[in-house]
Length: 307
Image (cartoon, rainbow, N blue to C red; front, side):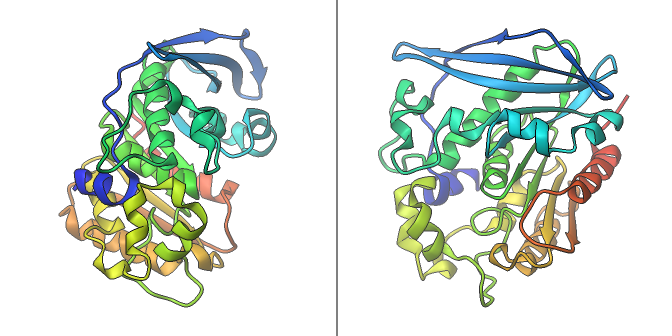
């Protein structure tokens, strides 16, 4: 199933094991119920080096579980807009990287991103930008495992919208993630292709605007969504027995809340109860809100967080 998602949707990442060094850029600074620090990932291959800044916020505990995500607008924006104190007070850390640091979100972004120093992908299904972001999330997870104040067995991939797609694809391939949370990932993320409703995104719409996110052959299924050999409930189910959670907004028509709910229900049936698949529908539109985070904390308290 994972191979099919690579072949038809996200593309296949090249076999690459670059050297990665994690270097502290500053000393921890007090932040509410914890502290924040900045680090630099130095990714090296024979083709060159690529630098990525990581923001790490940790609670005042010996070792903590951590939500790991890519963000849209930079690490400083995360400090200003994420409910970090809510996470810290509940005993969770946050590790985040600006997605553009791995690859800018545009059709020609590969020339500036980490792809330029990695081996060439397989010709039959080259990866798109979502694949690069998913790969980057796995690099971050592996480096977090080397830090003494993090529970390496309790790193949770989380993402909103397109970063939710990347989080799901990363966790499906990387068994090291303890769980994955997808917030309003919609088409090609956490909603069913086979669910049709007025005003929802489909393969034609997403590849028409963001074809570079995917392997080139994905666009061949524009207006043929029902013919795609895979659907997103299968991606959710493939992550079992690890926990999966999908969050949705009642007014987020483009992401198709009904299709997201149906994908969750089908994933539960497909995995035969071998792993929990959670869902909530909150009032409002497309966003990652404090209410969403409260649901995710409660879910992880039950299914991930352990002494």
